[in-house]
Image 1 (tube, rainbow, N blue to C red):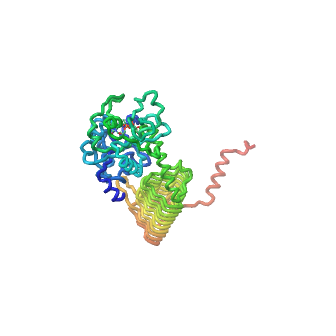
Image 2: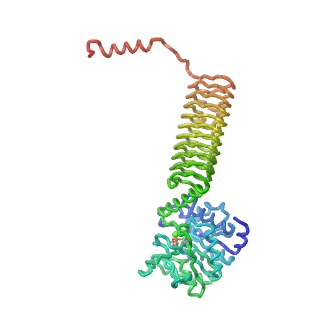
Image 3: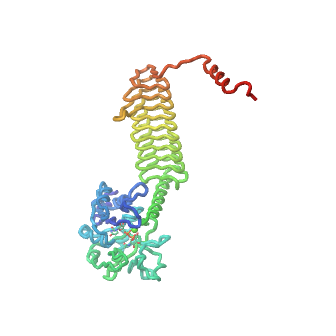
Length: 479
Ligand code: UD1
Ligand code: CA
């Protein structure tokens, strides 16, 4: 946010309506805490508002599960107004009366319209000032106007005489296509002096903020409509299906932004990419990939299908093969992982490390060039440069009560199917014979073999087989 923008709008507050229950969602979670694009609806709206005014000039009206809603966005630094009973959008503004009295103008946003962009808020604000209006509502003609309030104009005029809610439309008004998108600018003085004229004379017995259009107009105040260029950006979500439609358009916008910056995304409509994810140019993302949370991916990487990467940082030139799950870990440049590998939180995967199929790691620090190609569990482990971990190796990190660390030096060789019972360490360059159960520290440069000795009995198997066959098939019965 530019500081000069904040100063020039110091007399402007932004009110976000977020007290409603969201009855149409049929969910016990408050509507504004549902998530799209990996973030709550309210967090999206706050992020855009905070690009226009300082957080201290943003007020969220909260009511339904107010504590939960406030806690969820507390870190944003915005302020809150309580609307203890939800008696409509007009009543929500009545509850904000004291807070807004100190501002010359306010913008009113809906907490359930999360795609709103800061540039649209700025455009509305400029239009409202230029029009010298008491109320400026934002209107658009979405593909389907059903459910929205309709805007009533004198023919050809920017001025508005009223907003009529869907349930109040007369048969003649049903064909009206210009709708109220629920985003407004108000001059505070006329709003406050006429706010008590709202009545609950409607099917929901609520106080509608939309009725302020007619109230102000009839009081001789100027009410105008600001035509939004892009109706999609202002769409609200009243049902889960509508929310998921917003989710996919938001994710598609994220994918488009990445593609415009040089990232290749095959079948972007199949990928789930959160808004905060960053990917550098020349990385290729295959279909059905999920990139979540604060994930950052370098350049020239390839993320193959069905991998889910959450809160991870990947360097350059990293290959993640199919169906890997990576969480809260870092992967340095040149590493290649998978298919079917699982990095649980706390892994630090070094440069050029190879992690193969069916390998699980948790809090594992694998230094440069480590190879763990197949069927391995590395938990609470540190492995030095260039060490080779054979197929089926397991670090036994848990004794039933506590977790312990396994330390393996550099250039060591851990034979297949060995178990390393932590706490235990293996020195640089040491060899562990395949199938060993290592319970004591292994010195650098040494060999440790911890398994039963093999015995050999010459001819034993052929003698036995001949005896068994003779019993099973006596010669007379043959044929
Ligand atoms: C509202 C408008 C409608 C417009 C549509 C755009 C009214 C009466 N109608 O309808 O003209 O076309 O938005 O999306 O305003 N809220 C409160 N306190 C309340 C009631 C609601 O804070 O007492 C909040 C809700 O949490 C929500 C917002 O206000 O974030 C809008 O309320 P909602 O019930 O979704 O209004 P719509 O029916 O969508
Ligand atoms: Ca709504």
